[in-house]
Image 1 (tube, rainbow, N blue to C red):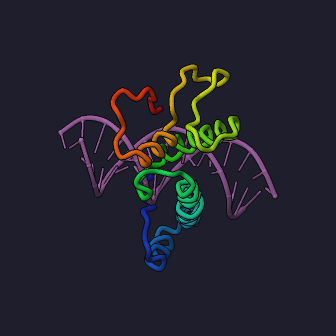
Image 2: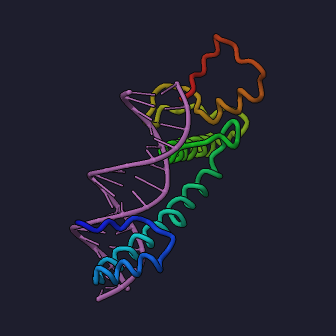
Length: 130
DNA sequence: TAGGCCATCTGGTCCT
DNA sequence: AGGACCAGATGGCCTA
């Protein structure tokens, strides 16, 4: 492909280029690129931002990559599910034997809460964050 | 400098 | 036919 549909803010300039090349598909491709940009920015990224807002972190404004958002969201759902299962919101949600993880370790979110509550965590603490 | 992350472009596929 | 969605490619930026 000789013509590169690089992003430009100036549609007038781009339009004239289209006319110069006499290529209608070029304009269609440009418009498709613009739609895809808009979809990525306004749909995909906003969804990631909305999901990010629901994930507690320390500090709260910690920067998360998209893959981290997805992984932590999954972990957080598991955390909430565990708390719902035990019905105890005060104690850490230790995993039970029925879940896929056989070891009784503390989840990231309980671990984070515990660290905030205690100024120091003793080295012989049996809980292992996952 | 290598690796991770991201935005953007692109072409294919599916849907209306 | 045109738009939405998706995945691969690419290049730029940032950080350890």
